Length: 401
Ligand code: KET
Image (cartoon, rainbow, N blue to C red; front, side):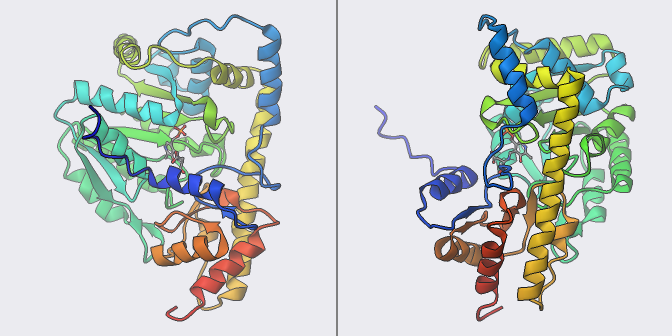
């Protein structure tokens, strides 16, 4: 009966992570998937979430169903973290927020919402973007197009071309943007450019869909959410997907959220009801444990302060490793400029290393990057950065470079 089914060729990011786990290379380094490793090379359990987990276990509450929209304390904490505690739209009850299965679940639920209520709308994603964006939105039946974004020549954004593309879109088109720590390039829009994006969204009647997976990893928790808040304050009908996978180091607990900013409290209640229906027909209700951890941390002043410190530590360590790699590469490959390593923000760096060289890094040196040349800086540490730099120098320094 099932013989006609072709095998799934695998996801480029997840398959590479599996290959890494199986690799017997003694000094292998994982710089592929977006996982944050601490300086000892471990995926950390944050101190704040460990205390929260102890509290949840001690409370020993029954493992009942959550409502379709998720845990109330989690949704409130999430809204204040993403939109800011002083957000007017929040005070006016205009934001519909649901707990979702990570950032991916939020994207899929948001994509289905768009397809159902804006059936003629297509979505535009940046060139390049996280590979799975295209997969998720096409799976929900949307036409997916790209807009110009990365400029390899300047290691910046093709601002004029991007704005011109937005300016030519039909009303109600959806534009997917990343408010901070752009995956995969590490290049974000400046606040001036965001203001221009807000302008064109208003002028053309576009729907901004903001995917924020790395809040706090760029310049700070509030700083990184600046674009979300500016668009909300400008009165745009923003859709936001956010993930706590990275900034709480809770990848497997599947903690994220989907928020839709509406024009009135009654519209927000209606939108929420339809999103609830979307959850009910898909997985009925979200998981409990991760939401309890995040809610406990966000809603307790002491734990919240501890967590903010931990996120600051992550941010600083990533920046320090950017500098450490640049210093070594500058010394070993003086002909090439590695400035981008320190100007880019967040976990990722677009290194410009070609696919053939990426393959050599993996097979000859055990150093794993994505074939696009994306490097996850958060996998570097003091013990492996010399090996990584020497491997890159060996591969790039050879004939033909
Ligand atoms: N959005 C972006 C921009 C993103 O980079 C990821 C994950 C997600 C959403 C998904 O978040 P989650 O809460 O895990 O569902 N990106 C990394 C992991 C992956 O590919 O799944 C990555 O790019 O390596």
